[in-house]
Image 1: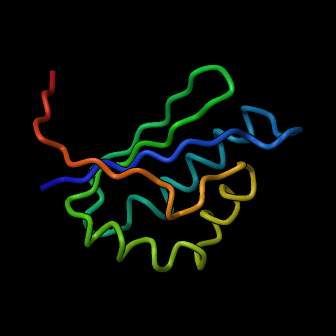
Image 2: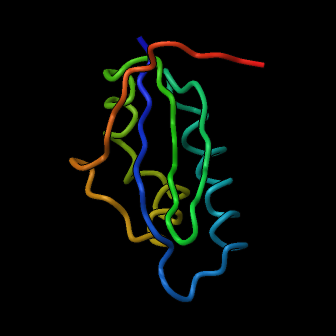
Length: 101
């Protein structure tokens, strides 16, 4: 069963939205898309609050992917731009039904 991961965060003061979005794109391309079990990724926001929603094939594959996240240059560049949530505080949800257009 698929898992949806939804960390919330704000961008650090002094970081432009353009620079943040470029770093996010690089993170998605160079780290996320290369992980077994990666399904999709959406970046959303509400005012200053951002949500980085990732869907994984399983919690096991999500956990395996993130064991090496701090070895990824693209991931580190992205992480340093945000006031992030502690890994233990990131909510995981089970995808019960997925409706596509």
